Amino acid sequence: MQDVTELRRLPSPAPRPQALAFDGHYLWMGSLETQRLYAIDPDHWTVREEAHVPGRPFGATVVGDELRVIYGVGEADDRVIGRFIPGHGFRESDIVACPQDTGSQLGYDGDFLYVSQWYDQRILQVSDRGKVLRTIATPRGICGLVVVASRFFILNTDDEESDEYFISRIDARGESPVVEDLARVPFAARALTFDGERFWTNHRESGEIVAFASP
Image (cartoon, rainbow, N blue to C red):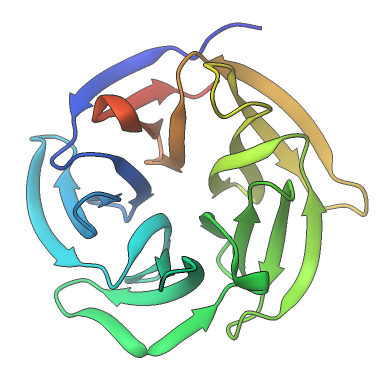
C-alpha cells in the first residue's frame, strides 16, 4: 500500500492541533493545549478568527453555517457535542452528551451527525439530542472522520503509538458496509477533513497541519 502524497505541511497556529473542519472558506482547527478554535485562511495561512472552547476540542464538523465540536468536560473528561456559531461563540444551552460520554471525531452528511468512538471501533449515527440511530463497525480505531459524497473517509490505526495509520473509505449506504483501505499515513495523524480538492490532517505532536492528495 502506498503512502499518501503530501501537498503542504504547515506550522499550526497553536500547539497540539487536534480537531479539523473545513467550512468552504476556512480551515477550523481546535488545539488541545490552548483550548481554542482557530479559523485559518488556507491560501494565506493566516488566522481570521479564534474562540475559546469550554473544554479540550477533539473533533469538529461543519453543519450549515455553524460548527459542531466534541470536547471534554470535567475531571472525567466526559465528551459532549457543542454548537459553535462563528463570530458569536458556543451556545452553552445547546450542549448534547455523547453516547456513553465518549467520542473523538465528528462527521455530517447533510442530514445526520456521526460520532466516532476510537476504542470501540465504531461510528454512531446520532439524533440532534444524541440518541444512537445506527452503529457502523470499523476495522481499526478511528482518529479522523469526514463524509464525502455520502461515504465515510476515516483515519484509523491498530496502534496509536505507531506510525502505521491508514485512510479508509466506508460505503455504508447498503445493509452491509463496504470498507476499503486506500493509503497509508506514515505518521501519528489526528483528524480528517476535505476542502473539495485535498484532505487535511494534523501531525499533532509536531505542531503541523498537513494537506495530502485524495488517495
